[in-house]
Amino acid sequence: VQLVESGGGLVQPGGSLRVSCVGSGFAFSSFLMSWYRQGPGKERELVARISSGGGSTNYADSVKGRFTISRDNAKNTVYLQMNSLKPEDTAVYYCNAKLIRYDYWGQGTQVTVSS
Image (cartoon, rainbow, N blue to C red; front, side, top):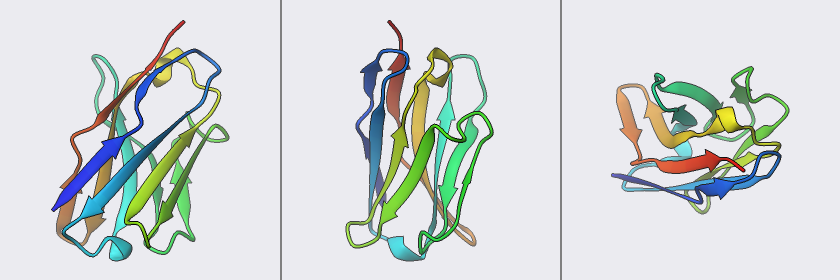
């Protein structure tokens, strides 16, 4: 089982970035997929999640209206489009796949918002 995130980097405040996560070794289309993040000195928090079919999404209040989660089950990929980025969005972003007792994590990708 693997979850591999990509697309992180350095972006200026107000900018945009899209991070991706490709899953392999499990039935990707059956899993709830989520993005979490952990900022410096902070606990890991849920950012957004999307149902297995993509029809239902949920967001943390801090990112509503700025971030969009989506998935392409044909490509075993989940995306997080991040717009109007703020310095407080700086964190390592982790991909998570969950189904009943199965719970998988990626290694994370760093997103830094700074001028």
